[in-house]
Length: 406
Image 1 (cartoon, helix red, strand yellow):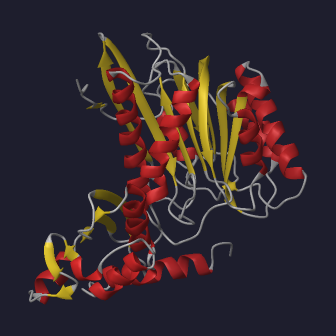
Image 2 (tube, rainbow, N blue to C red):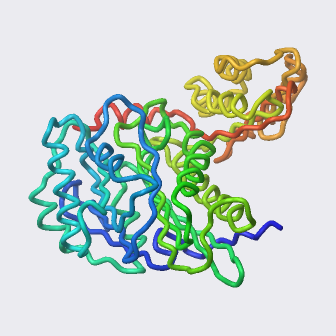
């Protein structure tokens, strides 16, 4: 039996029972209307914790510290996040500051610093202004209504917050999964993307929690691209506090299936919103590859197409240049037969059996004018499907990033 997954109105990271959050403006970022730059996420009940992190060879000490504190035998209570400063490439001071941030947070919330995680995002090569951390972290008030404040606190170049929650019922017990994310540039992840936090009040076996997150990240955050670059601070965390009650979710039953689907819905929504909010972007691009030999082949080909700079610019310019789509699928180096490929733009077929067919060019140009562009490639050599998301590449992206620190 498939358990239905319901959307939670105005859902956010604190929609699951037992979670509270808050945010404050400390002056790490430039001032602005309703800006925040330090956020706290807290659960009074200890949480099982799962995580995925950037595979960049240059890593923020905040990521290193979290890796040490995340595992199937670990429990955590809180996460502290600062935006505006990445705490990366600052030498030994980076780890000293990351640990002190968890010390300050633990003391403020009354939990052990070892049960507190930390994330940073912003400009690389700048030390965290610890004087501001010491002053402002203890001023943050967490509440069950503070999810939106936390979502604001983790933003950098994002134009909007990204928040969601869903729920499902098991034996008359409602379980909720909530999430927030940030990111709009330096997005081409490997194991995570920028910052994302997912909470649940379900009681979940720690090993199954990590398994669920890793698979969900593979199908969501690892399938988006804005600019082909990967952050040094990428972090996705999943916290389960068991506050809803009910039996432990550990796989092999309807409750476990529903939990996996709920986490996947949350992570996929957050990932798509990151792609939609890409720096300078005007269009969301969804790429579906059908008929691949394997699921990994389909995921690889769709991601290659969504990440192609030439595909991105063609979509921005409303140019139905299907040769770029072929190129991008081909450079993924998956096994295929060119003579079997069909290609569609917003359901308008433009290629059949590897060759262009007669179509109304203006209709495709008009289709490319929308806020969302769907590209579909049918390989017709197997049965597997993969989906990826990206955005167009515009002049605004170049102008913005040419003067990011000035």
